[in-house]
Amino acid sequence: MRADAARNREKVLEAARELFAAQGFEVPLDEIAARAGVGPGTVYRHFPTKQALFQAVTEARVSAMIESASLPAEDPKTALFAFLGRMAEEAAVKRDMSDAITVTPELRKSLHAALGGLLRKAQEAGQVRTDVTATDLVILMKGMLQSLHEGGNPEVLLGIVLAGLQSSRKP
Amino acid sequence: MRADAARNREKVLEAARELFAAQGFEVPLDEIAARAGVGPGTVYRHFPTKQALFQAVTEARVSAMIESASLPAEDPKTALFAFLGRMAEEAAVKRDMSDAITVTPELRKSLHAALGGLLRKAQEAGQVRTDVTATDLVILMKGMLQSLHEGGNPEVLLGIVLAGLQSSRKP
DNA sequence: GACGATACGGAACGCACGCCCCGGTTGGCA
DNA sequence: TGCCAACCGGGGCGTGCGTTCCGTATCGTC
Image (cartoon, rainbow over all chains, first blue to last red; front, side, top):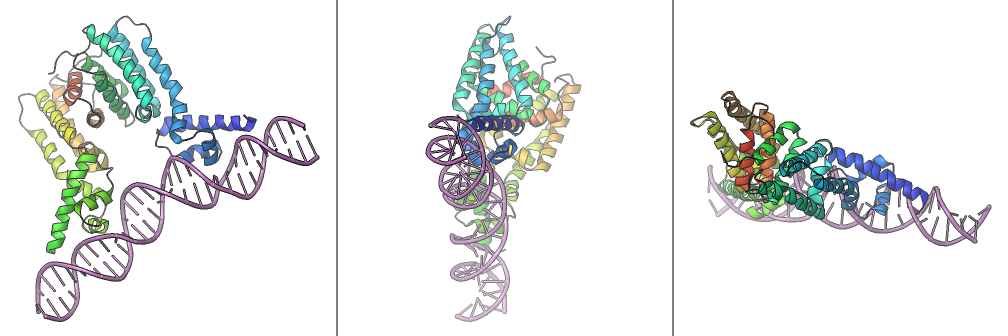
């Protein structure tokens, strides 16, 4: 690969990181190109589609977070809650976190699997209500993460969800 | 107003009701026109903008729901929870419910006020955690209502939120 | 230093959508 | 029944966006 090509690829990735984080997947690709100081054509020389660029930006970060699901914890509930906390923390600052769940199907599956594992153990330990499925949790978290971008207090919103998860029965 | 005009207006409203409920605000206006069996121009003869049509369709329904906030209940918590339950019930079937919060600012304000009143009373009665604001609740509910359209189990999701609201402290 | 391959930039295309305009049509009153 | 105003339909305009194309510039090699 030519030197300038590598440099431009990096500039595009850098611009995409900033803008996807700030505005989510919705940001126009031309804006990313402008910020990187290149033309839209150059972006497409390095990434076949806007989705591919988005994936290149988010994949590593999200995968790392998913792997953190297997970190040791004192009990299943703590493990699950810590993971959800990390998700909220990330999403509160970077807007692309919640979009990643929607845009990349495989990524959603990985998250589903990771959350499912944590959830099941917490439920078997009797620490989390048993009527929740992994699908429910992924969907609920996605909704909550989006709420964080509209001015909701992260601690309060997450606090409500976590507290709700460990209730055994409805009011 | 001419007879055929009134008839068309009603056909447009009917089509809009169905399509907004099924697909939300995002549905193209031309699709509504097609379903009503008229041209797009006819829609604009009766409603100055797409938003106005949306408002005409949702306003009454949402206002009625907001007024139901002052229904009598045995205690503040029950009143609040019943209201949230009605919101979830409606949103689970009609996709325009959650969009209405976003699209029409005045409507969001009304909802904010109604929820704020119910919330404050429940908090003063010590039945709901006090760190939640009305803004938090509107935002959280919007996120949750959207989650309902993605396959989340309505009872479970609402159950988590309600349970979370009445917890006094975090885990 | 010249040449070929590689990469660049931005103009242009296709598409979707909200919204407007106008020639033709229809309804209701005299 | 005839006439005019009201109304209709759909083609068209402007815009924004993802994507592609191509003439030009640049890199790296011989």
